[in-house]
Length: 219
Length: 205
Image 1 (cartoon, each protein chain N blue to C red):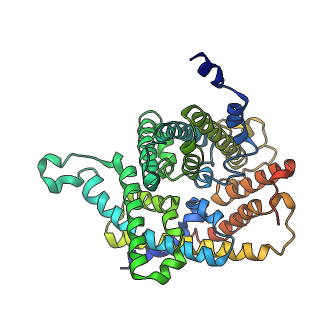
Image 2 (image 1 turned 120 degrees about the horizontal axis):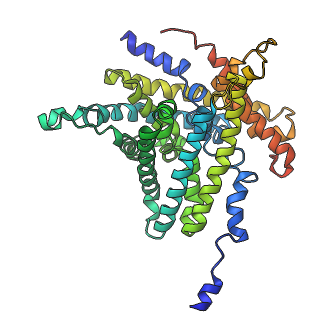
Image 3 (image 1 turned 90 degrees about the vertical axis):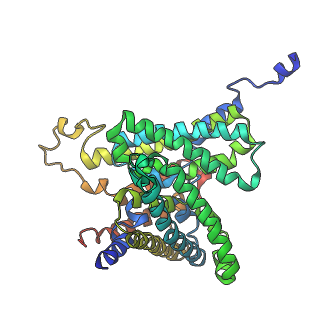
């Protein structure tokens, strides 16, 4: 017994810390693994929906990772995709009902994108690649880490799009209070439109890869 | 008839799955390296959207919607099962993809070998589930409208992925800044294509 306790990893061992912090930069789900782009772009016209979306994804991803990792030895590999989809769909229904009850306006703004968390590639990707082969606690950390990596990109995009597109940050009129409108400053309505989200992500990838040469793709 | 045609054109150009809603971006970015493979994926998406959207329409109309169960008798007239729609839609999509795969393999082996691995992947493509959810949100009146919306969205995706694949094939010969190579430039090109598609936005149908 004492031996078993000795061999047990501490809760935040270096390996586990890596699980949380790597997805923030080197293994970022959006800019490096290219997972979960669909929802990342559509909900980022304002900070508030982007934030709510990040929290929802975090809840679903962490819970689904833990559940799948607990079931990993009992799921037959041939039907694993369906099992994963059903578990994720059940969790997403929970999140959707909670949002409708407590944040109705935001849930209207997110419209179909809450439902689309089900087919968010981050979920399937992490479930397949990590939860199917690891214990629940590392799987939980991996879920939180990846969701944070997803969240910070989402929030960065939303910050710039809202600041330049509507002149506000979290509905607070920054540009107006700075008095820029009196100087002739105009909001760039283009930032709110869908194509600019793609270009902002492109620029984030550019900055990240010029700082971290390892990530540059081969020709 | 005219309404159906309008929905078709609208879902291809104005409400394009990729450029207006970013649905199916994951497979769009991953499979668009060459025109041949993206042709296969595009076809598979048109095919599956054309089948799942009408099936989900029937499911929504006769089982899930508020009051949809009234055909069972008075006791069921008040039942609203719409909170179950995510799980029902995804189940329908996963099983339809499986069925379509078997049918295509049996009756059209040539098509099967060209669609190949893409059919099973489609079950987790956001564009497919998104098609069903938009169909539910926009409350199409008849099954013909729902079908034309499904096929139209598929064609929109098809056009987008063929376009980006052709551009990416060409761009391998260009001198892109190293950090932007691959993923970064693809995002920016998609953004530019999106701006081009925005010129359809003002059209009222």
